[in-house]
Every structure is written in C-alpha cells, then in structure tokens.
Length: 126
Image 1 (cartoon, rainbow, N blue to C red):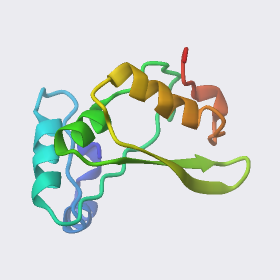
Image 2 (tube, one colour):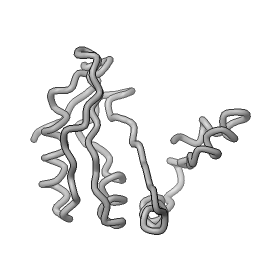
Image 3 (spheres, helix red, strand yellow):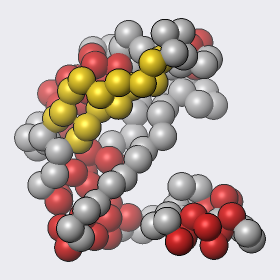
Image 4 (cartoon, rainbow, N blue to C red):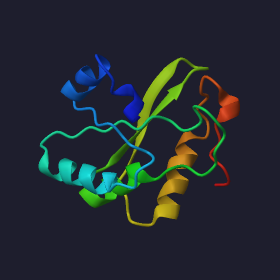
C-alpha cells in the first residue's frame, strides 16, 4: 500500500502482517520483487485496491497482471458491489502474456459492479 500509511503505529502493524510500502515516485522493480516473493513463498496473497477511488481513469494499472505473469500464478477477481452489498469471486484468470486480451476479460468481469462512487469508475472501451 501507499508508503504514507506506514507511519507509527500503523506501519509496524502493516509490516507484521506482510505489508509492503509502495513508493510511487520512485521507479523500482516492485513487480519483479513481488513475483520473486510469490515464487519462493508457500502461501502468497496480494490484494490490489480498486481503481476509481479518487478519479475516473479508463487506463488501469497493470502491475498486478505482470506480477502474476512473472510468478506464474492465477489472478482471482474479487468484486465489491456496494449497490447489492455483495463481495464475490466468480472468475480466475491465468495470465497468458496477451495483456490486451486478458485485461479485456478482467474489465468485462468488473463492468457491472457498482462501487461506492460509481461515477468515479470506468472500464473504458472494451
């Protein structure tokens, strides 16, 4: 999560449960490091927070995709729907390396979910 959350006392807690601060301003090989961790850890879980939390953006970040691709692990698509008061995971994607095709599948899955602020969410052109 954002490095700003890793201050005392929360930082100690987040690190104790496996949290890793992300420094967005620096170009680091975060996807390589996380893929390596996933390959060398018996149980690896990564939660990527949803797009659309602050502004409308049809161009989704793809770091989660490249981590899964490099580590050869599946992506479980969990959707949160505020309107239906529902959390569900009905689709799993194993990255093929065809980023455009796989992202189209992912965005298609999420297109009908309604967030807390649906006006700030878009899947763009799919």
